[in-house]
Image 1 (cartoon, rainbow, N blue to C red):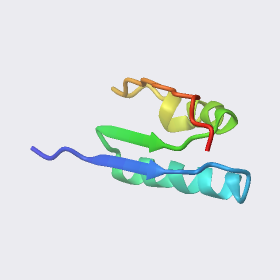
Image 2 (cartoon, helix red, strand yellow; image 1 turned 135 degrees about the vertical axis):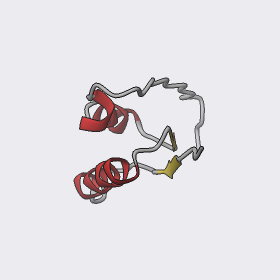
Image 3 (tube, rainbow, N blue to C red; image 1 turned 45 degrees about the horizontal axis):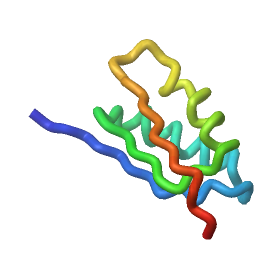
Image 4 (cartoon, rainbow, N blue to C red; image 1 turned 180 degrees about the vertical axis):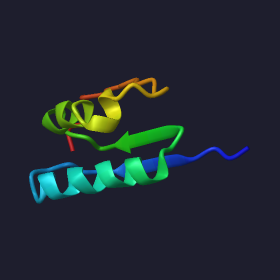
Length: 73
């Protein structure tokens, strides 16, 4: 049995956001991972991620968002 995991460190600012979102969408559709991890996601990008086709499709994905907005860096 294989377990596919995709992880992305986004630092999701506004530079080429739509291009990067489409690239993430293609990677998720291609690899169909069991687990997807995102780090350094800004608040507005989080809403965009939740609206992606792979996130809303009727697949066995469970979504959990643990958010710590305390970083002041």
